[in-house]
Length: 185
Image 1 (cartoon, rainbow, N blue to C red):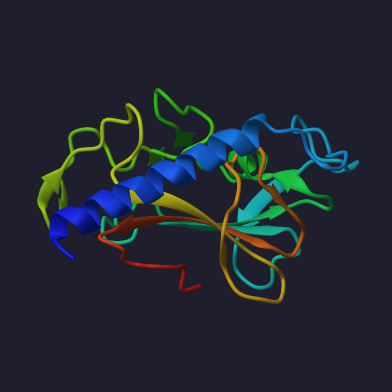
Image 2 (cartoon, rainbow, N blue to C red):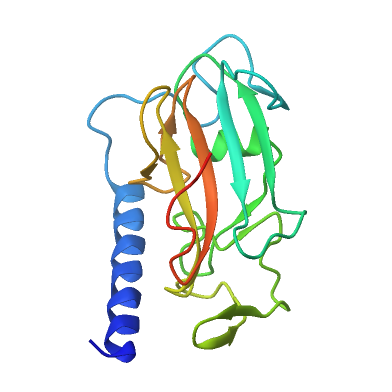
């Protein structure tokens, strides 16, 4: 398989994933979900340093090969009911930006990373993320969820609809040329 075919296949896969996120955001839930404006609990979520066990949701941001300190974080967000990933990230003070075409379905920047003026080095050369339509298939933020006991799984929904529960972990991971392929924490 030629590099061109691999790159085309990767771009098609990322486009399909983006479409799934968009469709998931537009579909009606199978069962009533808690409000996205506040968690379904009497106590408001709060964040703290992620040292020791986290009884809420552990939030991890890993910029992978980029490694700017502005993006990376690990905090525990206290909550006692399922809450959207977007709300949990907001409570963790993690700022996400979508693309112009998919403002809430995809993640283009986390805490300003990658900045629009930063070259991302990849196998094909360098690239600058413009956050217009789809992020590049070779350099993008992915959303991962890990249950209290179990393995990391690629999120099946976007931040606005993905629910996370107390005891779970939520990670935003930046991947370049397929590495890292999954969270290591």
